[in-house]
Image 1 (cartoon, rainbow, N blue to C red):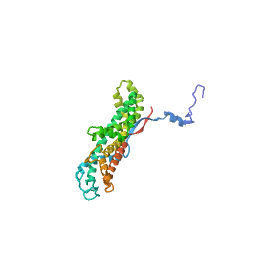
Image 2: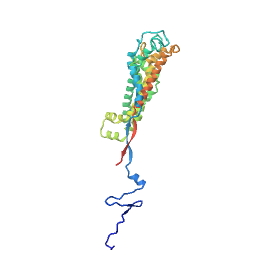
Image 3: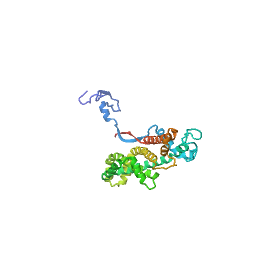
Image 4: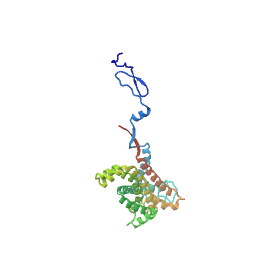
Length: 320
């Protein structure tokens, strides 16, 4: 070999960890260390959150749907008139009264089937009103700190008022009293707690960069509330709705027990408990049946609301 001839090819190329056979017309393979491979491989980042449906949601929602449907059609399923005596007072179950009779001999099953529709409708209305009012007030308070301080101070004052005293003050001062007075009392007593919860959840969202960018871009307050903040609070609002429904059932039942809501001879679960408390030893079903119905209603609706709350998951995104 002369000085002008190129060196002979050995068929091997150097690499980071040794030598590899080179294949003509194909690039030589490159071997990297584990650390280098981790640096060059696509990185999976949790760049966003997605909402994933959970298993068993239908099973958790079904009891509430069945109970609400039964209460809605209950008056048409009742075997007797709600105010017609069919047995002796506090008669034991049997004959035409599967759950016995109440203090006037009226069929307990009939009054149980007919007494849930108004309670459920009232509680649902109260839960919707409280959740909507709290969502607006809490979000506006988070976006406008001056308004938020006023709302929180008013909420603190109302939270100091005992629930029973608030029901009596509002219901007894309402012209004519009745169910509308109970609804007003339940809304007034429920909004302060809900506002504080929504305000705490909306504060970090209102302080985020995209909200500030939208505000600098000239978006109005209603747009920030409805289009920017509230969609990010749907999990909180669903959970709040379930809690407010349970609280509404409690307040409406308490009002019925205090006789500041529905009046006799109306069929109402809470009113049934008060009317038949004196004869619980003679016919326990006259008190136990409406009590169990109220408990099942509160638990099933709260369970359904918690099942419908979207769960944040992680979405893998490949980095470019």
